[in-house]
Image (cartoon, rainbow, N blue to C red):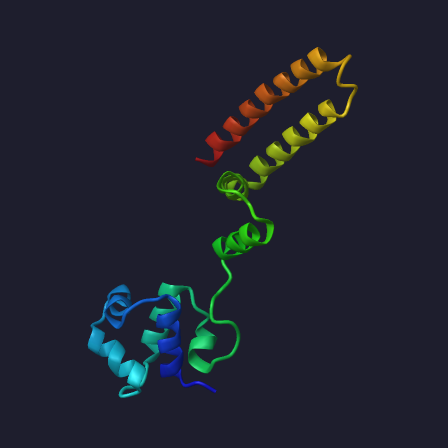
Length: 154
């Protein structure tokens, strides 16, 4: 099993940082990082906590090598979705914006999409003008609802 100073080096290399860059991010000098990575000095508890918080690292991994190195955050999860489904930049922005909404805001968007889908499922030739008006009215109503919800959240 790797030592804590070996894990520290692994972490720094994972983020492709020099010792100087890594040190700057946590507010110490390059020589501190060098001494920690060489095992010249022990990594103190406060330093472990600072490194874990700064780089979103599993503190248990940093201390003992157990668990995953990175803590899963919404951004990490979104990045995985983007890769798994080949989302475009616009699709990624839409998913991200949707997830940033409150539950009420997400509910309003879902309601809007459901209404639009119902409008599209009817006979496209005979009901196009009616369907378009219904969808247009629904868009206006949903936009007002979203604006009201957004104002309440601010």
